[in-house]
Amino acid sequence: MGGALLGQWVRSTQYAFTVVDPELESVPPNARLVRDADALGEAQFDTIIVAVKPQLIDAVLPAYAGRLSESGLIVSIAAGYSADRFRDIFAHAPVIRLMPNLAAAVGKGVNGLFATPDVSAEDRADIVALMSLTGISIWVGGEDELDRVTVIASSGVGFFFEIARSFVAASERLGFNRNEARDLVLGAFAGAAELARQSDLDLETLRNNVTSKQGVTLAGLDQLRRDGMLDGLSDRTLQAAYARAIELR
Ligand SMILES: NC(=O)c1ccc[n+]([C@@H]2O[C@H](COP(=O)([O-])OP(=O)(O)OC[C@H]3O[C@@H](n4cnc5c(N)ncnc54)[C@H](OP(=O)(O)O)[C@@H]3O)[C@@H](O)[C@H]2O)c1
Image 1 (cartoon, rainbow, N blue to C red):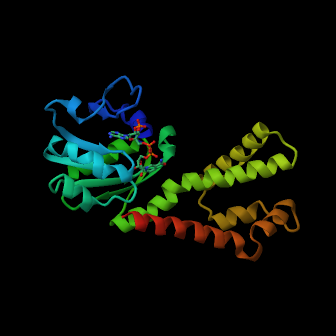
Image 2: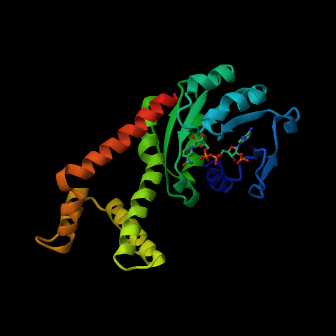
Image 3: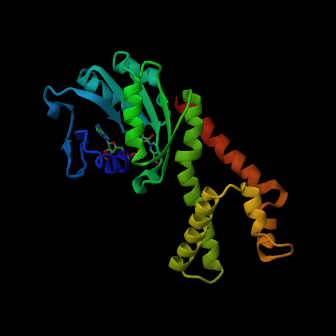
């Protein structure tokens, strides 16, 4: 995820990015790659961006505690790991938690942003400008809301892949080869999503507009919606992901 963001962020030339990663083979040409905290010498940074797995943070980050400059900012993309826990490591530094999604890699991300009250207006504006290179951003007022954004926008990418995979498999059983099925399903879904985004109509109206009485779409929808199955499944999916996010706090 960090690589997807960096790939877009380096388009902004006003920042010098240093990437710390023990194994990564390369970074974009205008970023610097080092292996660990020791390789940074005495350097201090205006912003430290945390993009390791949440379960690694307690082991990895203390080595960087002295690396944040006076009035420096912590930015984290780690799911679940709270701002207060970063403040324990970085002596009460201001924290912005970002919740990006992988579509940032193609500039189509949806990002949730949360800032602790001590983050300056300038830092907020700088991060919004960086995130605008990756997609759209939504500020949230609290970390619980950020967790709820996570299950929809970040995990949502995974949910979409699973739904699309299932439709591709069903399309294959209908007689298409894997590539044809993939092109048809992703084309239909991406086109429908773009149509909906550009329309003022609500989703029910858009659905009704492509569903004629006793027609082909209705026959399929009758299965998709049978016994409220789809709504129940959507609820259970998001609730389970949200419950897991709460466990990880
Ligand atoms: N994946 C998503 O869709 C998504 C969405 C929103 C937020 N996030 C958040 O993004 C973070 C990364 O998730 P991911 O799925 O991108 O995981 P990932 O692919 O495993 O990325 C973690 C990165 O951290 C590096 N790393 C491991 N140990 C390190 C160390 N000691 N010092 C510096 N770097 C180290 C890894 O390097 P190596 O590969 O060399 O070990 C890897 O580049 C997580 O906190 C996650 O909650 C992910």
